[in-house]
Length: 203
Image (cartoon, rainbow, N blue to C red; front, side, top):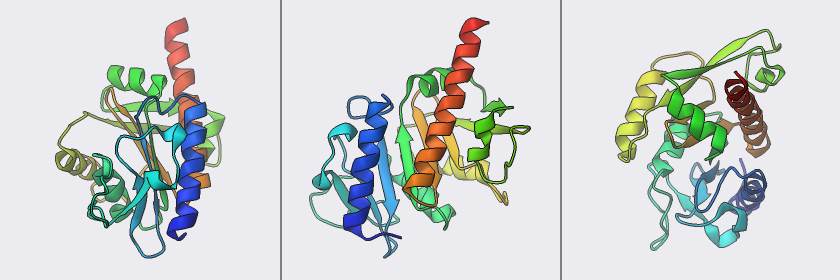
């Protein structure tokens, strides 16, 4: 796990990358990294992720509380911390608001089925395109504690959980062991969801 300075660099670079794809418009989205001391570096509330600098990244505990007076983390910090608490191997979390994610999550039921895509291999345990996954979709909720409870209920005692989910009409959460893996998974899911959206349009 990185120290704070290294994590800040990774988060700033990730914000610029997500911005180039149009996945974090205005002040949308948030990005975090688990630090070596067990705390979390996460984007400050209200900033544009394409214009982040080191001051736009703060530290919080696994309870989501800021570790420095005056620092205000994103309202959705609790969802990042919920991932880190549940998955010790998670080292980075990305949350974006792309058009395919927003549209498809509004049309979906409890999940979106992704099947037959080469990029399914971005997920753990899938070595071939001849596979299918159910990407969970949760109803959005401004009460982050209640939303995290709903997510954890769906995870339940499952031995393996797909490292990503959607919030209806809101956005996507994806995580990985480090920032490169989290970015790779997010890009793979975004590509597949864009294909799904285009397929619906053409049909």
